[in-house]
Image (cartoon, rainbow, N blue to C red):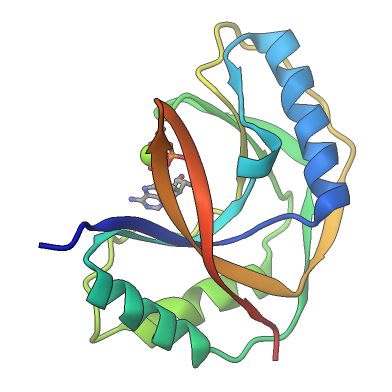
Length: 172
Ligand code: ATP
Ligand code: MG
């Protein structure tokens, strides 16, 4: 049987925002211990689809291609600690209607095709895993214009998690 892939839709910050979030992740690591997320892995998940065989990944690709969406601004303003997954995340202070609409449009496009895990959309960019001590970390607000989203495959390579972009779609 062909191997399943662990796939999810996400926004990848453009280079300048990625570098800024990378610096922030390093700062969090110095303050709190734990493991900063590598800059190339920084992302904002729109919809997690789970482990899927190749034909279902192809269905995801077709469904995503049918989604029409307008570009929107992503603004992240503070660092939050999420206790259960033990993460530090950069989160918005205000709802992100554009991101919410895109996440919902993707879910709607897949309805009837795939059974998806149900978890409410909570926009965040994970910057650090497993902090050893908790400390306030301030961040300067960081914004970027989202004009593209991608389907990523989550893989473990030599014990390290990495996300590989399979396809990307631009706003319409
Ligand atoms: P690891 O599982 O090795 O700690 P990870 O959580 O980043 O690393 P994945 O579990 O493959 O890697 O998840 C990929 C992305 O999808 C991450 O942003 C993760 O937060 C998100 N994700 C994983 N499971 C779910 C889920 N059930 N619902 C919503 N998002 C999820
Ligand atoms: Mg995980």
